[in-house]
Length: 312
Image (cartoon, rainbow, N blue to C red; front, top):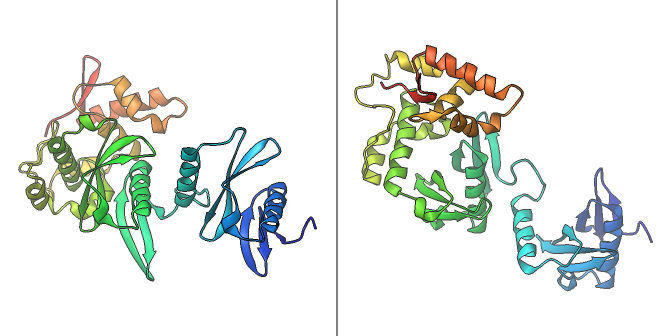
């Protein structure tokens, strides 16, 4: 009886009856317990409880896509909100992969893709996982309808607010804020257009904005703002002859990151916090060395211990 209805895989056990897979469970002891639970309930998934006590643990179970899944174990009985969050997280990342469903990395860009009726659709391009995850989660919760987005949406993963714009059926995240009261839409739109312009003219690298770099006048009209930035002037730039373009595009990825972390009178501490994702051995010395290189290239100036981009 111990092995009846169980089929061992490389790292898990399928619970199978008459060629139908009822569950895929990692641990053998849990698989036997859930197999016995299915037998006790005549293999009727509708009779399986959401939580059940096993030894000293409460198991959280859920029926998703006509299969029984073990979502978690708790020492005390979890509340309804905890169970709903477990179900939501499982639907977003059932295989416990690096990015979850529908998100892939192409070089430095994260892409949201989905097969619908046999065709592959792209929903957006992103330079960071948090934005991509937020958009993917929202689309999963709204049947992949991009028109369901409002201009400001709450991100339940980071408990923050994101400003969203749909352009040619692609979902762009324009800004991320801890509090809704912090959002100034005019400034958000200006900063978004400035990013596109800096990418267009080689002042920074934002590959995920490639498709927008020749549409700045159209987007200025749409958002009812002019493109401006506190550090760069976009007037009279010759994009074909600009020596600055060549300098910017020849920077190393870390030099680019350091340059992008600087605004006006940016302290070393602010730069360091902005680059914390690159933290490694000799982190501070690496930042200082790259700052010196940017200063030598006349891209950055240092005054009274703070750093600023040089003006065009």
